[in-house]
Image (spheres, rainbow, N blue to C red):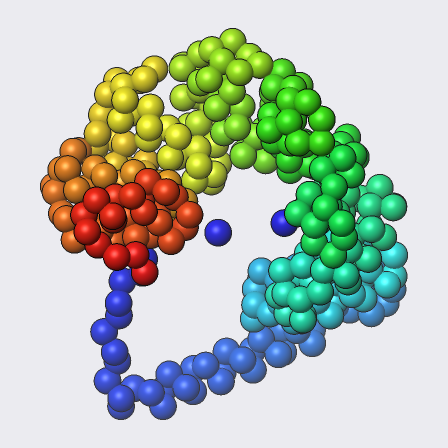
Length: 314
């Protein structure tokens, strides 16, 4: 359906002042909530403004404190008033257990309502429930159909998810050429994982012409758009000198960027360069930390590196 430095503690004498500031900020947030234009419009019957007000709580915008619980309250109001994107976003909160008690059954009901009204993101998220058997029997065939509806309605994620099932041959025989078309559409619709996945097909020559140059262009596009896997894949090209000038230093930077976004492979591969001193200073202790992050995130390379070094996992 995403390492922080340790801060020195502030002297105790400042705590009262900090508490006063916190209380003042809470008071300002409450005042902003009461006098928010979207709230007033929502209470006057504009369901779309209920959604906008919920979004402000979800993201902590417009002077409002971030609150998934408050976002859920106002998404619910928008959904009940017939605004289908609110049903989708409320369904996602129930699926993730953010601000509400997690319930796949409730998520399924809300996302079904949205999809029945041809809300593209609702169909895509409903497809995810079917693909993973959450609140409903697992079915790749149904997931495909729902992802298709989402994609046809303009959901880039729906296109990418459908493409992934096609590459893997889930629900039907593998069809990488069709997947490439879907990844391209997803990329064009702004879902950058589609750019990265299309890059993989070009690197492998799977369903499209093999092209390292096109792969690196797409990985870079994905990376710059915020997809950590795009950064990790581009790092591999720089480490190998595949389609780009070989540069361990550049690979380090890209792996670090991916790892900062919790990409397990990026952490593990960065660990390898840090351990061996390629592209920068060697640091065994830091390498172990990076391998552990990779292993904890499910990257087998990190786990095997820990075993090789005789170090236990977490």
